[in-house]
Length: 307
Image 1 (cartoon, one colour):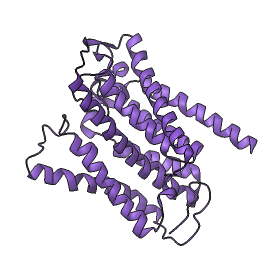
Image 2 (cartoon, rainbow, N blue to C red; image 1 turned 90 degrees about the vertical axis):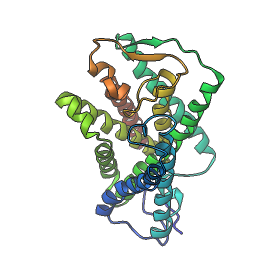
Image 3 (cartoon, one colour; image 1 turned 60 degrees about the horizontal axis):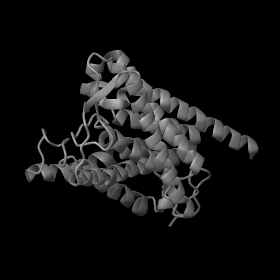
Image 4 (cartoon, rainbow, N blue to C red; image 1 turned 90 degrees about the horizontal axis):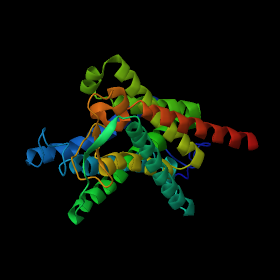
């Protein structure tokens, strides 16, 4: 089994190397296979339909079931084909891991809240209904927290941990950053939604998704671990739906939110509110992500200069 030096230097020991061109095929294959292995049996058994697959609780088949299967398929690949351990994809288990996860989770909450409250201050969101949480409303919120932790952790392990790491080993860090970011963006394209958005919306979506991935890539490089990025990604997705009742990645579940139930203000510009895509489709998202990317870039430059 290989002892890996994550991102910085080649792994030590005996392992198989996945060809660079194959990485761009395997990453989509991991996710598509995971979805098919869960969603097809669920559909045959009548558990889900095309109409309810993105509604609660049926969406858990996708967020928990499909991503758990994807993680399993991915682990089998690195364990039995590459003969590497989880450290090689940034899953280092030590005292720093807990601190990195907690710090990343809080940072994700703060940045997501920054987007929502800025849109609110600019008149893009208004309160749709008063929040009256019952004890039973907390259960789906907690289940979704677990679901997004699993979903985000799987994506970060595959994209920033494995793909970026394997490309960086052969071609350098920036090839790893750009390579995983481009594929991450392409795999998050919703063709029907993009047609409705038009060219300005497509440009906004592309810039936001690219910056999302570049920001998390730099966070992984900064910490030499995927824990902080996985936590940031999970809290970012979780907050929009469960705190403010807004869509995340185009999914709107209609659950009672923790803080306030927001909706786009009538006649507010879609470029401000994000429309059906939620805050991730707002112009504020790439702005905040760009600020975060620039801050991380300065930190990395300062660290490089000091070393």
